[in-house]
Picture (cartoon, rainbow, N blue to C red):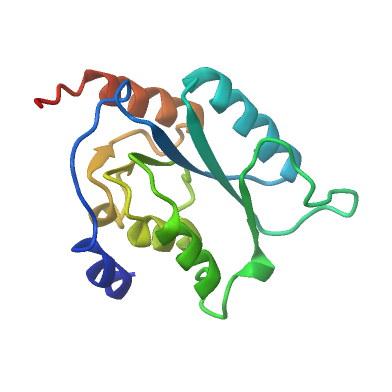
Length: 168
């Protein structure tokens, strides 16, 4: 993770961005099922109501009846998409590098390595997430209780992103 952070950190235009000024928001969501990811992704897109919201979901394994045909997720990563160190494969890192975003919101409360690596590799102007052992990958860190939900984390991140005053 530190190697990826060192490799890409100097290559991004880091700046605080108010939520109302953001054009593109990249959101990482961890879930147990594809249905859970799809429902939550739809809810987020309605709640934030921005021009472009790109959601990336991670599930360890698709259930037998689930297919990768989804409506609200832009990208789905499963356990089979990871390498032997549980890191995203090169094509997913390249995809995230090519995805331009003003704001990255990491809603993964499990500290899954997949989203830590993708967050570190992202060129988003501001990266938001919760306080964990990998806090160095975030520009805006939210300290929440250990039993908190991703809904609370999203609520807190949106509150602080709306409060940011940016001088032009």
